[in-house]
Length: 162
Image 1: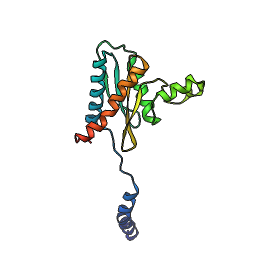
Image 2: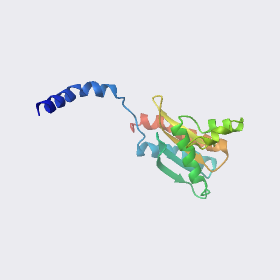
Image 3: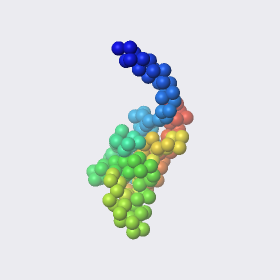
Image 4: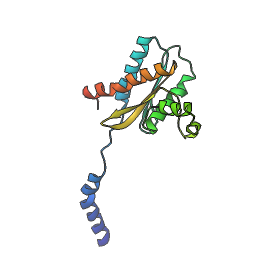
């Protein structure tokens, strides 16, 4: 019993040093995901684009999905795939589309990758905290709309939504 108490005391005393070794991780909240999606939606409406907007966390798991009126249903899974790719690989999904276009067909075999333009990482303090994927129009337009959404993180943080 004395040994267990000593061990417990040792763990308690070492806890601050252990905690100091653990990084603090920013996470994408639902509120901020909504602001990202709203910015992308506003850009899509401005362009007259019908798209699906997917916002995922840093592990590629869906937080928010919007399908604008009259957007093809097939774009739902594609938008999620683009966002997931950008999140888990920590780079725009276009990187993989470009690799395939340039002949590196092995990129098609990457687990979890959707090698289609339109997925953009959401970055805060140099770290990927999630991503946005847009699908429904041309690849460049999807990416442009996603970039507007991803850039909304700065406005959301300045507004105190961190």
